[in-house]
Image (tube, rainbow over all chains, first blue to last red; front, side, top):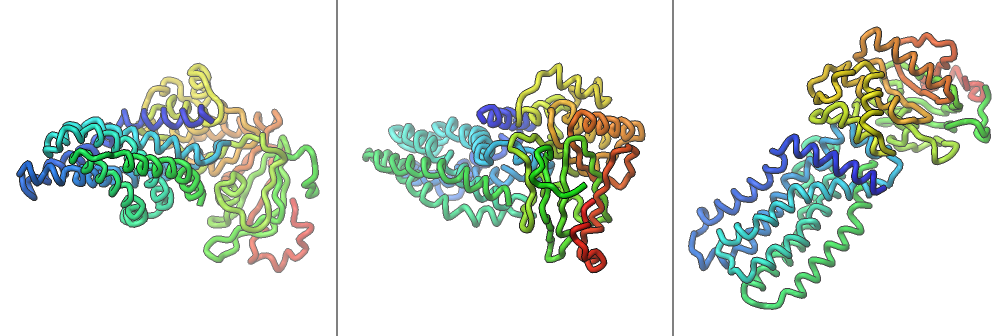
Length: 219
Length: 220
């Protein structure tokens, strides 16, 4: 089974390498939102440092959402999803492999550039490690939860809007605790509780979503 | 041949299999047995349910009525449908690599040999997007030579192949069934092999059901 998952991960990474635009798009979107936000609201450091946590988290969520629609759709359209489902392995392993690549491509780059973003938005420097940690736990959760929606709308024409409606409610708790943890760290408060909740959500998503999305794909 | 689900030697069989799409019954009470060496040519008019039947056998389409029974879990199947399951951005070799990697592994030498077998020597490192429709079909068919499977489920495998390609493929079908494999395929073209068995879905469609009330004999 590990070899099966590895075959998928390798193939998808190769595809990303052939078409780097797919990887850069969510990242560019993320940067644009962050860059335009101060222009639209106010470039004042005091205001920005207060809102930074929320803005970064919402932008990260939207960037994830943007790339989710294609998670299974491309495979469905060219028939390779059929071949993946025919392999003699449980479908959750296929979901897990695809989600891992999705996170590697859309989540990980966000985490890596988040210190830069934090500086742009005047986030207090003591909150930066918390921001990175919360994104590290939170973005895989977003990818995992999104996989359910992506699996459900696979094969549906114009499923993007439906996907957003389906999974946005699931994203709300992750956003709330993710953004709150960063805000708390900015004010020098303890973040253990937030992190524990984020981690709990991640573990829960890791257990439930591959199975749920795998079942949805078979429909 | 009689319907013998308990037979040891069969690879797969169906029992009273039916298919309903959009509240239209395409075929019902379909019973047949696939044994090693069988080459089934599934026939039927457009929309008769040929593709759906192959997908049901592969496990890609839900079976609501009746059953598809495999003699054991270790039977390997290769299904090649209308959509070939190839990634346009990847080369022929890379595509074969991941397809074979789903259920086993392959070496580059094996993949090159398989591609040469289907007449694609020299195209191993070309992105599939650059290949013609017939060549893409050949890349997908190369998998048949790379992965050893018991049952081949081929949906219109002659599509966009040239005449020589069709002759070659019929030869592969022949070799595979002679070696103890089984093939179920749909095609609007006749296959000139002595051991081809015809499964005409038209006989199982409920529109003709009245004149075929003797269901017990509706087995080929």
